[in-house]
Image (cartoon, rainbow, N blue to C red):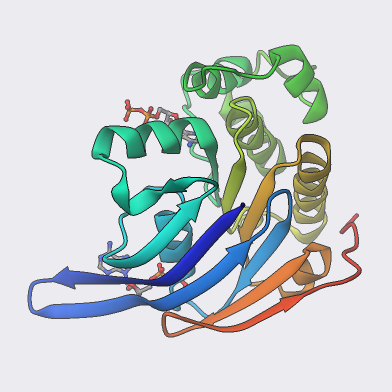
Length: 228
Ligand code: ADP
Ligand code: ADP
C-alpha cells in the first residue's frame, strides 16, 4: 500500500525543445509517513509531485496509489482522485482574495464526499479567531495555515507540499512544518514536502534527493524530530 512509482518518466515538449523532467523514477512512499524532496531548481521535484497528485500525467512507467493505477484512470477519474484523495499546498497559498478564511476552507470542503468538521479544522490550524478575516488581513504564516486547512478539510490521504515555507521567515516556516507534522500524526496523512532547506529533512521519515530528473538518493531517517 502507499504510493509506489516504478520507472516513471515525463518529458515536456515545447516546439523543438524536449526536457526530460523525470527519468525512470522509482520510489515507495509508505502510508502515514513524511517524505522531504530535496534538489536544485529544475531537478524535477515539482514534476514528481504533479504526477503523483494527478495534476500532470506521466509518459511511461507506473504510479500506484493504494490499489489505483493512475495511468489507467480516465480524465474524469483522475480529477476525482485529485479532488478527493490529494491536498495541495503551494508556496503562494493560492487563497481566493474575495472570500473569508472560513469561505476559503469551505472551497476544499465542497470537493470532498466525506469532509472533516469545519470548527475542528479551524481549531487545529489555530484560526478560530480569524475565521471571518480576508486573506489580505492575514500574515503569510496565517495564510498558509488557511491553505493547509482548505486541503485538510477534505481529509485527503496525501498532502503534497511544494515549498510550503518558501515565502516565510524561518520562525514562521518552522511553525508551518510543525503543523504539517501534527497533521501527519493526527490524521495519518501521508505528507510529501519539496524544500530547499536541508534542515527540514530532520523532521521526515524519508529523504529523497533529485538531480537532473533522477532520484539520486533515498534514505530513511530513524529519528525524525519536530521542527518546533
Ligand atoms: P523543480 O521543481 O526541481 O524546480 P521542475 O519539476 O519544475 O523542477 O522542472 C523540471 C524540468 O522540467 C525543468 O527543466 C523545467 O524547466 C521543465 N518543465 C517543468 N514544467 C514544464 C512545462 N510545463 N513545460 C515545459 N517544461 C517544463
Ligand atoms: P474548477 O473546477 O473551477 O477549476 P477546482 O475544483 O479545480 O475548480 O478548484 C477550486 C478551488 O479549490 C481552487 O481554488 C483550488 O486552488 C482549490 N483546490 C482544487 N483542488 C485542490 C486540492 N486537491 N487541494 C486543495 N485545494 C484544491
